[in-house]
Length: 283
Image (cartoon, rainbow, N blue to C red; front, side):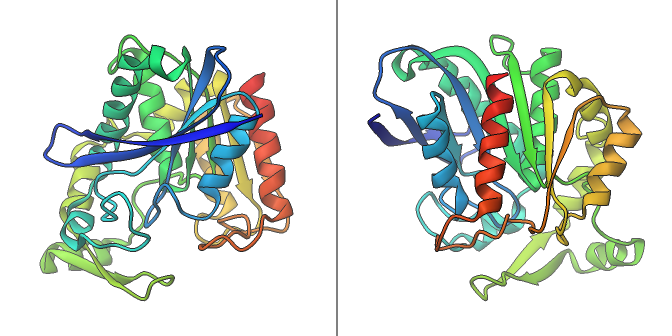
C-alpha cells in the first residue's frame, strides 16, 4: 500500500495559523478520519505521532495530526520558537483550534476522501482536549455537520488543575510560572491566564461530564508506570463520571510508552497501543 502525506496551513480565526499533516493511502475509497491531538510541550511531529499516522493510514484511515496554535513551534520546529505564544496558550484556545481544524477538514471532505466518520485520538493534555471536543460534537454545540464516532485517549489527564492553592496564589502574584523543558533545556513561561481560563470555563471544560457523555465510544489507554499522569488519576475520573468506557492498562511502560524524540526505535508498548487503538476504531 502506498502512503501519501501533505501539510496544510489554515488560519484559526484568532490571528494564528494551524499546521497539520494529512496521511492516507492512495486508494480512492472514502475512509474514516482520525484526528491526532498532542499534549503539553508536544507537537505533531514529536516521536510517536508520525509513526501513529503511518500505522493508521496503513489500517485504512485518513489521519490528520495537528499542531495547536499555542504550542510555540510555528509549524516546523521541534522546540519552542515563539515563547510568547506558548506563554499565552489556554485550554479553551486548544479546544477552539481543534474545532476549527475539524470544520476545515469537513469543507474539504471530498478532496480528502473522507466518508464523514470522525475519530479523535489524544495523548496526555490532548486527551483532555479530546474529551471536551468530543462532548461538544456529540451534543451539537460545535461543528453541527460533524458527528464523533470513536475517541481514544492515551495517558489522558483526568483533571486540569495540577497545582496546589499555594502554587496558584504565587502564580497569580507573579503573573506567570516558569518551567524547564527537559528535552530542550529551554526555560518556558505560562501566564496566569492559563489557570484563569480553566476556572472561568470550568463548566465547558468539565472532564467528568465529558467522560460520561462519551461513554459509548470512548476507550482509555493508560501506562501502568506513568508518573506524569498517574493511572489512579484516570481511574478517579472514570469513577466520578460513572462511565462504562473501558480502560486498557499497558504494563511496564511510561507516559510516552517508552518513546523519545527524535525517534530512536518503536517500543513493544507502542505497538500494543497502536494495535489496541486500531481495533477500537474499527469496532
